[in-house]
Image (cartoon, rainbow, N blue to C red; front, side, top):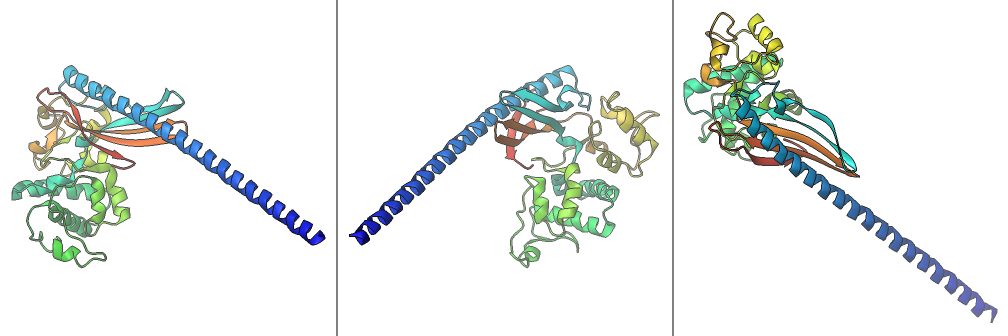
Length: 314
């Protein structure tokens, strides 16, 4: 009898223990579900704020081209927002002129002379970034082979399918324009260290032969436009926020010309831009969204529009 009562007591304890474990599991699962729902709601709200910021900047770009026919770092679109309070969170971001960077797809220009001019600017940019000249030449050739439409390597430094099929794992070159500068990480000879150096100064625009806006180009890119950078480029760099060049003539003509014979061809220079990128971060509750929106603003007065988006990286 005592033995039966002991077994019954142990059984009761086990039942209570199992019920406690089950109840704890249910409560934990419910708590996780509540937090997951809250996170999803915060993320959804962050997307709505991002969509609003994106649309607002479309109107800014449209208004800017009505105010003037040039783009500079003193324009309203160029002013960063470090902290914008929103409901239960904040937003920050800035607009970047992508035509202030070197367009990697310019290395796909079919004309040999045009390619030589583009390559010269690219090589000077790499030299300014203290990248070895031998490595720089190989990189220029490898990028051209990555994006051109033929299957013939560019000189001894290039690389087509035969080169990449020997990698582990093997892959082929796309033979199309780059869609993002991150594709550089797949190009022969590009290390992560080299990519980090290049990333702030290059872009991948969906057009070949885009000029560089001297009013917005970072120092390395601006100096790469000159065969031998000197006082004229340095003075322009210091004054361009207050006194941007309004046309190419102001960059290449007169006693105070920024560029002269031997520098970048006039077809490679610009004082206005069509391609821009929004870098935005939105924080709502526990949600965070990093958005990169890419804008195209036609030069002929048509409304600007978003042609691509990316999350967390360009």
